[in-house]
Image (cartoon, rainbow, N blue to C red):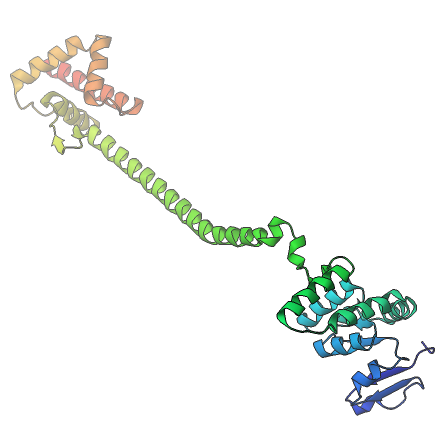
Length: 310
């Protein structure tokens, strides 16, 4: 860009050497006087407040390169008013600078908008009545009916104006923070309770099956013990002695009653209904293995009794 001369304010002395002829650098410059000169066509600024006022008073368009957030807000407002163009500080390139400088210098619309802004800025004040009349006339005489005084919030929809989306995100975040640990804790406790209940049920079932095998029952009101009948007890001892190799079985506690009971059991034992009843009497829930063991013990006892009678 050899067609333009550049005046740059820079405080670091090491950049002063090896400069092109159209570039001038100094650590202090009379900025207001330079901007008011008629030969100045463009002001490259970070958009500080005083720099904006001085540029408007000097009828100089602005190429804004904001650094701080408040400067970026001011630069965007100036760009909306049509008196400036903005380049992001992180996106500065030769092509971006060259194209924006050409637009601001060659298009007269930017100078006209700056002149309108200077007229609005330099409006004088008077008494309260005169000031009211002044602002009414200012709005009536301005292009767009005083749009520059309107708030940008008037153009926002309900969702953006009331920050509904922000509130929804905050509520969802709080719900996730509170609900997720609660749900995880409930799942862990529920699984632990189910496992503990299943373990207790399994232990109780094994205990009751063991009690039934030995002729005992367990109820919720207490533990009731029922002794085996003498006949069944004598049958078990006889089968155990026979399995050990002893030919003579032990005598019954009551010979006459036992013999009559055994003969009655042997005479009735041929009935299928009685066999099922005896098996159910011994244990109604022990399964096929328990039934076979009881049947084998009864047959062995009956065989021993028949040998004794012979």
